[in-house]
Length: 276
Image (cartoon, rainbow, N blue to C red; front, side):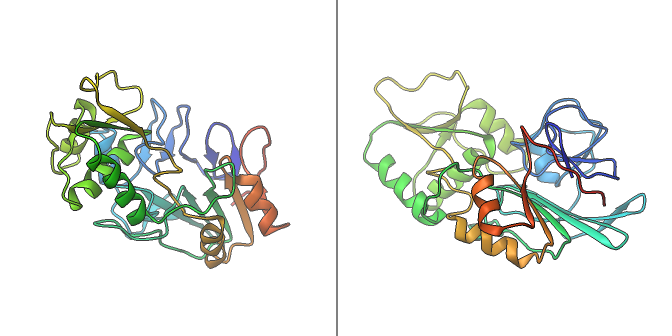
């Protein structure tokens, strides 16, 4: 494995979640894509969300080949359309997971597990915390929305926005969304939220102005969690039975320290290699 604005599976043409143009790039979720790639490897839903109309989506749990490599996409639980990539090259295998969420939620499976010689996984939070499970996080957000006649929920990514709209609707709250979110949901064949209403969701950076006097709630990885604790992430890693563990993200060093010698931090400013 090598890190250069993304993870390269050394000895293969495959890059994972690369931020610069690559000929072949696996995209774990719609919030992890850089511009101008050649061939994309992703689920049909992720390709729809990013507007990649000239690419062929790969269904979950349906193995395929790329040259001599055997590849399979499995659920990562990160969000709608998200997946992990399992690659077999001869006698060696790697599981690139990116960000995961191990618990299932409405219409979305939790992270699947595949045995692999090496695993790459993200630890997104810089500090160790015990976060609420997603159902509790959704209840807390719904309670906040009910306290305000007009409210705006600002999310980091389209993936989070789609999830939050679905959760709030399941709790009886009708939610509107800005144009970018509505178009993304329509492109993915999902139910369209209303364009206007007292409660609406927008992605950070969207210049849509909130209703006058609206309360604003910023939703981040802390309040809308991936994995709820280091313990949950470490338990998932152990299930892969990986001999080598590479961890990305702000909390990578903490997870590496907990695992020991077989784990390494992957990402700037350091680089490491593992040839498949």
